[in-house]
Each structure stands twice: as C-alpha cells, then as structure tokens.
Amino acid sequence: MKLCAESLRDRAAWAALDVALPSFDYTAMAEKTKAAPVWIHFGAGNIFRGFIAALGQELLNKGECDRGIIAAETFDYDIIDRIYAPFDNLTLLVSLLPNGSTDKKIIASIAEGVKANLKEEASAARLREIFRDPGLQMVSFTITEKGYALTDMAGAFFPFVTADLENGPAYASHAMSVVTALLYERYQAGRYPLSLVSMDNCSHNGEKLQTSVLTVAREWAKRGHVPQDFVAYLEDEHCVAFPWSMIDKITPRPADEIARQLAEAGVADMNAIITSRNTYIAPFVNAEAPQYLVVEDKFPNGRPALEKAGVYMTDRETVNNVERMKVTTCLNPLHTALAVYGCLLGYTSIAAEMRDPQLAALVEHIGYDEGMPVVVDPGILSPRDFIAEVIRDRLPNPFIPDAPQRIACDTSQKVGIRFGETIKSYAASPALDAANLTYIPLAIAGWCRYLLALDDELQPMTLSSDPMLDTLCPLLAGVKIGEAYDVHAALQPILSNAVLFGSDLYAVGLGEKIEGMFRELTAGRGAVRATLCRYLA
Image (tube, rainbow, N blue to C red):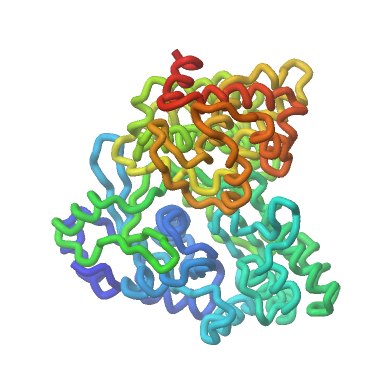
C-alpha cells in the first residue's frame, strides 16, 4: 500500500492492515481549504502532524467543519519536499500503547504544505494570499521555543534578525519576521481580525509570540518600513489576539521498529529520512496516546470548534495554571533531569532510565517533594493525578522510543522555566526557603556537568544542539575532572545569570550548594553515579 490520496479509496485494504481512515472526502476538503482557508499552522513537524492535525481530523470526521489545515514549515523546507509532497500531505499516525500494541490511523486533515520562505516567489505569493483572506481565523505554531527568540544572552539582536529589521518586510527570513510581514499583508488588505496561537511547549507561549511580533513591527516602524498604525493594529486584541496555551504529548523521533512493522505489513516507503538540516523524520509519526491541549478562548475572527476535539477552551488564568503545573512541576522538569543524567550515564531511552532506582527517585523528589508545594491547582486537571500518570505510566512506557539526547536539546532555553520558576516561587514564599531545595539544584548541577561533554566514564560525549553551547562550554574550560580547579570561577557566570534561570541563584541561596554538587560530580570517573547514590540512596 502506498500512503497517498488515491489509496484512501481502497478502504478494505487499509482496514486489513488495521489502519483507520478519515470519514470525509479528502479531495473535497483540500479544495475547500485552499480556496477559503480558516487555519494555517507554522511548524510542520511531528507534534503538529501527530497531535494538532489529528485534532483537525477529528473535527472533520464529526462534521464540525469542512476545511482542514494548511501547514507552513519555517525551518526545514525538506520536510515539505520529502515528507509532505510525496505522500499528498498525509501522515500515518501510530499511537504506542503501554501494553506494546499500536493504534494506527491516517491523518488527512492537512490540505496543503507550504514553505514559509518569502524568498521563494511561489511560496511567498501563496502565503500572502492566505493571510489576505478575510476568513482566516487562526494561525497556530509549533516552532519550538527558540523559534521566537530574537536576541542573544546579552539581549542583542541576532545578526540575522538585525538584517531582517534593516531590510524590512519584503526580505524577512526569521520565522517571527516572516509572520510579521504576513500580518502586514493582512493589515493592508483590510485590517482583518485574527488569532495567533502558540502551541509550543514553553511558559507563557502566547506572550513570547506577541512580544516577538510586536518587537519586529515596532523596529520596522522606527525605520519607516511600516506605518505606526500597523503597530496599533497588532496591539489591539480586538484585531489581533495572542491566546496562551498548554500542550502535552510526547512525539519522539520515528522508531526503526515501527518502520519495520509497517514495511512488513505492506505499507511502502515508510523509512525515516535525514534532511539537509539534520531533521530525522518519517512519513509516519509514532507517539504516546495521552495528550492535553488547553487554549485561552480569545478569537476575534471566530475559530474551529476545538472543544469538540477534546481541547480545553478556557481563560488565561486557567491556561497559565495548567501550563505552570506541567512545565514547572509535573512533567518538563522531570524530563530535563532525566535528559542530562541519562546522557551522562549512557542511556538512550527515557523508559530505561525510569528503571534506574536513583533516576526514578530523582524525578519523584523533584516532582512530589519540591514541585508540589508551590504548584497551583488549575481546577480542570489534578496536579497529583497528572504527575502520577507521568511517573507511573508515561515516562516508563518502553514502547515510546524517546531518548535523553532528544530531550537535552536546547536545555539552556528551558532551565529558567523548568527549574527557575519553582525556585522563584520558593524565594517569594514566606513559608518556604529556596536554600532548602536539594533535587532541583542537583539537576542543575548535572546540567553543568553535562556541558563538559564527557560521560561518567570520561569518554567524549556529543552534546545535543543548543544555541548557547558556544557561550556556556568555554566558561567551563578550566574544569578538570579529578583535579583541582576553581569551581566558583567556572560556575559563577552561569549560575548568576538571571537570563538563564530567572534569578541569580547565589542571591536565592543556591549558588554555593550547586557548586558543591558540581564538585562532587567532577571528582573523577564514576563520580556522577556516586553522587546520585549519595543523594538518592
């Protein structure tokens, strides 16, 4: 069987493979969507294909809408050429259940794949056409947290952002510049309303998106590229809204075992590819079954009936509380702790780490003991039930091929939220003292040890991609494992950096504690394991 629009007609053949098909007419949906789009999504990767697009499919299956989603890729255009186009924008979603079985279905809600490349004439023309359509209701994003970043650690614009600011909308290249340029098209077409919804896994994602878009627009206005009234349009939430959201679903890189199973079943061309930008991606998406999406209900031009697909539509305060619960306590801090220590100890599976008594105890202490005292119950989801599902069912699921090396990507962009927010809450509480924290500091010390790029056996270790590696790693050049060195001189520039952690860790009473843990972790070969045993016996 070939994954393509034509093969959707052979329902019996797909049913024989236990693959569920969409119940709507894919060709008709695609034609309607292209002619009158209501939803475009930036970031065409796995979380979109395996979660957001699946939500769109559920609405189509239920007859709650007759149009799907247009996918725009901002970073890796090979995804459109090699994963979307050859398979008619279809995705085979494989849900990995804890008992080892799978649930398979074809996601056919993506009507069109477009490169978010304003330098390519056809792509630019199509994107402008979409944004000038009065009926467009929603622009959503899964471009990762770094996709919104305009400045470096010192607060200076990145060179490519500076070029965008100087050159103006017609020559935009950075994702945020491209989106702002397209919003300018919409403004010029008639000041039509719109909602821009970040669905990225980061704190206050809507605020990050809004800040970046407004920064670009204001800088363009200063340089005379756009009128000040365009900035006013973006600032008016009755015209352009930036709802906040919380998203949760693990969609790891495609597993070779799933590709093999699909090939043996007779599904053609399911092997993963590595793109020119080193994205590892396949025509299928393998993912865990649990998923959560909570969205602030602020849509000045209307919206799809997302609640009919299981999305929690609510107010900003509730979104913020759910997001803080998940990102700062119940999942993300646990993931990051497992990531850095998993890499140091040679693990390649998050599930395998959860069978390690010290690592399992570490995440339980971070979540239950240190996170729960400052978590806010959002009301719609129970924090204790959520974290229990994470620790008991989700992280230990051996059929989720998620690796610490993937989770360790961009850790510098995450520690301020995943650990820093809890630290700030302790510092602000009259009843708590941040200096009494133990396991969050141990996770931070582990990340600093990870930055030495040597595992616990002192073998060279490849660090996962992170925009701050070139800044952070040289700061630790004087650290010699098993030898004397000035630990304060090495760590002070890192631990005192409020941009990284949200506060100066020395000022809240944790800097020296982390220094001591780091010294233990660098005592020699095997010191990482010995330190974990010391704190987590």
